Amino acid sequence: MPAALGRRFTFVSLLLLGGGGTTQAQSAGAEPLRKSDLLRLLSVGTLGSGELAALVRRTCLSFTPTSRDRADLVALGADSVVLREIDQCARRGAPVRAAPRAAAVRPRAPPVRRPRADSVKRVVAMAPAAAIRAEPRDVPRLPLSAALTGFVLGGGQRGAVGSRPPVPVIFQVRDTAGAPVVGEAVTFGVTNGLLGVSRAVTDSAGSVRVDLTLGPKAGLTLVRAAVRAMEREATLYAQPGAPARLLLRCGDALVEGRIALTTHVPVVFRVAGQDAFGNVVPVSQVEAATGDKNVLRVVVAGADSLGGVVRVIPGEPGSTSLVIVSSGQREDFTAVVWQTRHTGAACP
Image (cartoon, rainbow, N blue to C red; front, side, top):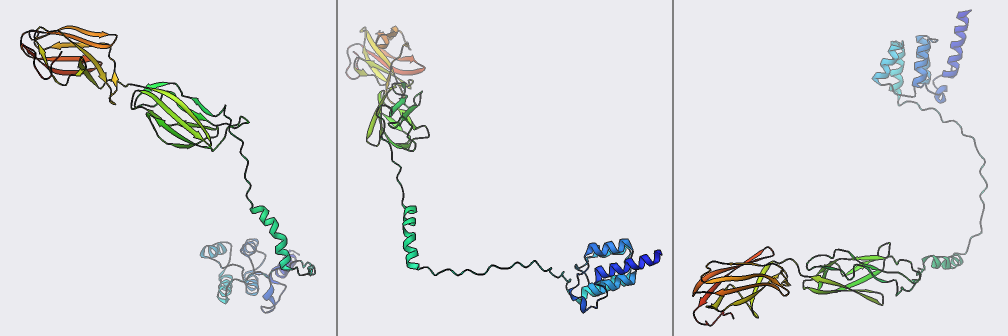
């Protein structure tokens, strides 16, 4: 009884996989064996070597076995008879692909004939819509607010010449509804100052930061802004910078290196500083010394309400050095004392 069941299972397997005894010509449409099918038949062992070889001969394979595939087949029990049929199947041509299954045929809807439209009328009918889509629309802009447009920060402050203001200078643009105007061009100008850019565009807050450097002259710095037909102005104060050198004056005359003095005639010098831009800088403390006190003696060195002051008294005729120190700067002069008043660089 088990042998009969085995033969029946074998017969059913052949019918399902090989098409039930069809010839090679008749099995052209039979589905070829897949790799998984071949491996399953070898592992189950329901078909003998000859039966499996006959099945391969009739249906062929749906794949081209690689060397690794052949090793797997041999490991599962494929002998030379089965391998020979596999090789002959490969020599007969490319793997046979499974016949496409007939798809469910759906009845096609009969073509609907539409009346031929007049091309001229169609173009004319579409023209207005296209024209409407292509026509740009200008977004109306509200007028600017005279009360809310202008410099809102940085005006009136003081700073050293050659430097940026301590607080940034901000210009704001608002419309009559009080909303910030974004992307509005603002043009700037300056007197006694330097601008990084002369034209800028307002940001998302409707503001522009002015790129400003004060000076070079000590005094007023005027910044102007123009937006549309509106103009605004801000005033800042440029102050002298740190002293870069010292100035020594005798009366209205500026002493340059050498000065002639008359014996026993006292002289008062005024001392001031000068920054890198040429602006006069007041000094509050002055020190002075001479090389020979018999020729020139310093009586007073200090400051008053007008700035630095040095008072000297010439002695016996001769020549000596005069050194002035203030605000971290030093200047050296040569003083020549004459018995009588000498022409040239004389003081007083």
